[in-house]
Amino acid sequence: MDLIVVEAVLELFAEQAGGRVHPIQSGYRPNHRFDSKSYYVGQVEFADDAWHYAGETNLVTIRFMPSPGLAERLVEGHTWDITEGSHVVGRAQLRRVRA
Image (cartoon, rainbow, N blue to C red; front, top):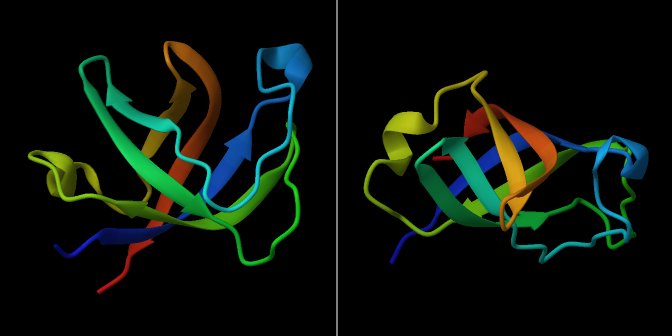
């Protein structure tokens, strides 16, 4: 099964703005909410092996399992919510879909 791989700018909300308390590393698998009914799971990968903290913005690679309706939502410049359950912890904006 071929994964859908994208590059995106990921903003993790600061803790004071309702974001995460603990940092994340490559392998983080949040929910990606494209609208009120469309959630997908994607694995976030960073270019380095460092910890990334709430309040930071980074260029990331996200690997999605192919799912009905996902490809149509992956339009350059589109922004979506990063959630843990119903809790919004960040936002991502699509830079490009890798071929």
